[in-house]
Amino acid sequence: MNEPGDVYLTLKLAAKLFSKPLESLAADELRRVTAVAARQREIETLILTAPEAGNVMLPETSIVASLNEIRSRYDGDEDYHADLDRIGLDALSLRQAVERDMVVEAVLEKVVARAAAVTDTEVEIFWFMHRNRFRRVETRVLRHILVTINEQLAGSERQAARAKIDAIRSRLMNSPERFAEQALKHSECPTAMSGGLLGAVPRGQLYPELEAAAFALEESALSDVVESELGYHLIRCKTINPERELPFDEARMKIREHLEQQRRSICQKSWINALRRQALAAVA
Image 1 (cartoon, rainbow, N blue to C red):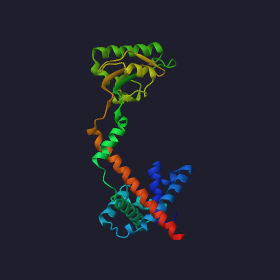
Image 2 (cartoon, helix red, strand yellow):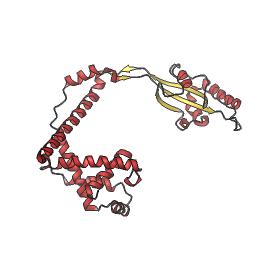
Image 3 (cartoon, rainbow, N blue to C red):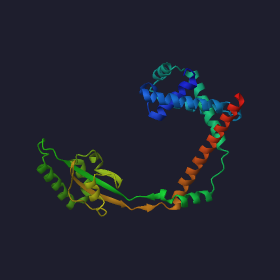
Image 4 (cartoon, rainbow, N blue to C red):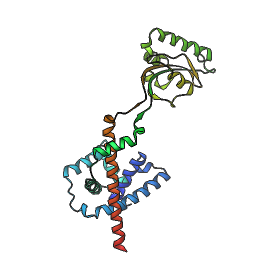
């Protein structure tokens, strides 16, 4: 892995697969990156020797923009050049690696441009065959207050915790609009900082006791005190988003994008497989 392109490819894969710098990878992660890089390198070599790569012209502005994006990740020139030295690159070899990467991408874009356009009829057929994919389950936008029970902590014993949650509920029955304020002041859940907001919650994400209470509420209603293994809870249902089927007009664009991406991928794979067959025939 001494070639600039090999180093650059491995660094990219470490970031893409594990969101880590190469030197921070665990042994099994490094093995995976190395294996994927070897396969990718083989494919890139085939791509770069294909006729389609012969007339690729990279705009200087695009190369400079890519190099500047890499440079912008560092606080200063010293850090930037020190990191290049550490991984065995310099400004010239980095540029060569970036150019190679950009040529590969340009060739693949040329190849997928040959793919047939997705028609309106194909979009409609996909919709009718896969309508279940476009069902949206019921969700409820919930706010939540938690008062924990801890018999070892003064003021958090079961009786004290119950008295505290009952007092909060009493205030909210009179002024339900104060839920976010009361959550911020009294809730012992991390959501307190956002006024107790849990977001749009589907079934299956809450403790069973909380789910039963939350999905029995009317919109804007406040629950009774609910006990779980965490302690005492109050839930307010802000909004009910009922189960629905996404209308075709809303799904149309997503379907087209999915089919186009699928077609692009098939086109690329077919072309690369053809290159492989040609390479094998040449050495047979």
